[in-house]
Image (cartoon, rainbow, N blue to C red; front, side):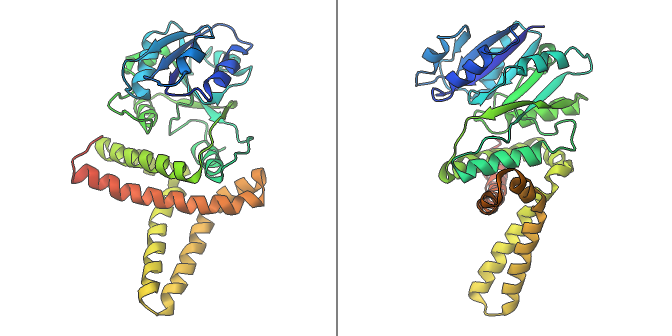
Length: 329
């Protein structure tokens, strides 16, 4: 069974070598690697040329959705494995994928991020922990939100759906959209928990804010455009995250009210709402404490407040863009 590994690349010179090294050190050898440069301006292509890769160079930047689709078109394998250029796989990862796809019942596989690495920036640590806890909770066998950092699918199925939506020019929610399409057509995306990858990222708080806000705005417009907000609401693993958004809105309102009015009731409500917000995410905080220690918990809690604020802002900004400015994408 041949695996076609498709890697969309845009100025990935800092991580691409390590990514490709991990692939070519695999114990499983029946694979091909297709690197699609999305009009990179660094030396990503020169790095890829040092390996036995098919290299596709796009004349203009068209986004990861287009790049992945182009790579899939040129693939020859039975299985497509989409990897991001900043992930590291293990030596047995391709073996695990090949063995799972021997079963005709398996059509798509979701790999997960390892929670082992300790990241320099607390914002990055928060997001990696967030994904591990909320996107791939231990009680779920199948993914309800697709993440294409490590995603395997039978080629004939992928090509039958015409790939990712190329109208999405940025790395935002093109993978989530494709996942919903698969699920709505009756396909299941197996979470293969021993298929763990390391994510070579380090976002400081400023970069985290820019990245998350942009992604969340695109995601809100996607939910409104395709009426997929019901998909997200039905996902019980996200229910506490979603509930936290209006709770934070009330926290901000009571804080503002306490500035303009001297009534102590606002201070009491402010305190109660904050306690409720923390209790809402106590399971996540315990998860972080058990794996990263109490020192990380306080910093991650502050970033969680920030992340919820970004979600609240994105809901407002994305909705205004969609309804008033008619910006569908």
